Image (cartoon, rainbow, N blue to C red):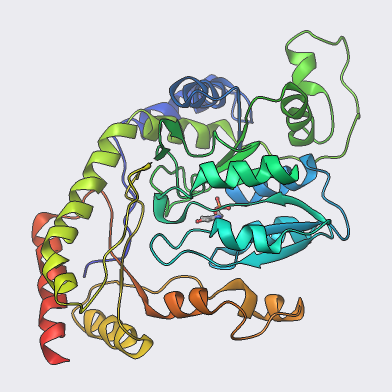
Length: 378
Ligand SMILES: *Cc1c(COP(=O)(O)O)cnc(C)c1O
């Protein structure tokens, strides 16, 4: 059995978690939370990073920070996970679904501009598979129409657009440290505030149940009290300890995933040359983190057929998002089948292959051969 994903552990998780338990300080914002925040700030050149309980929560915080309210519109891709849309809807704002480009499956800047109205407040681009959106064009649009950018970089930790890490380009960025992501503590996330002291200060308050407790701990105020809305978005230092052990292996984990990615690519490129499948496209402006390896089949039937074929060979290959605009929630917002044809078409033809650091050369070879065997049957 080759599962779709297997979490990777360095040797330090147990030791760091034990350190936290031995210290007696197991709640949020202790030693390892600070270490993770500082590590990301320094290595990724971000002005403010706050660990949270998930990327979903970080997106909720972003929606609060932007003061989204009823009737505001936010442009995001339909080809995406639900969290981005939930963050918008929970504030009474309206997610406006845009198309993706067929090369990267990332939001299409041309379609973003078409969908901008007087009510548009923000763009929430998503970096699919750890491959960057076209951030220069998105940033130009945001400047031209005075919109905020929140990058959903859940899948993009340690990947880059040109010389900048994903999540550090927009006004706000969000990361996920869920078990399925490249760097993981089971459940966890971070919010990155780029170059706004005001937003950074407010983010700390929202994350601390609407109090100025963080300022109090730094000795900036002599009491802490209720000053804004908020909730408890702090991760336990036990999980932060686990995450720190993973962050220390940023490069090693990425290199191992690259090896898997490159082996798939070279093993399957011949099928691409014969137009049986299409492989991922990584634009020259992007340094990927190899989060996902997907292939595109010519039709949905062939995709389903290959998925079943691989399942019979005990290979955990899987489809990805049902486009949000044709989900029950999306349809209740007034969307219908056929509204975003590129998205619907691509999502129906996409298959993700197992990818994780310890996938062995033999296992990769078995997956590659199985796909070749299947292609002889069609
Ligand atoms: C995984 C993921 C999320 C949610 O991350 P959590 O940390 O599980 O909340 C949000 N957006 C995208 C694009 C994701 O891939």
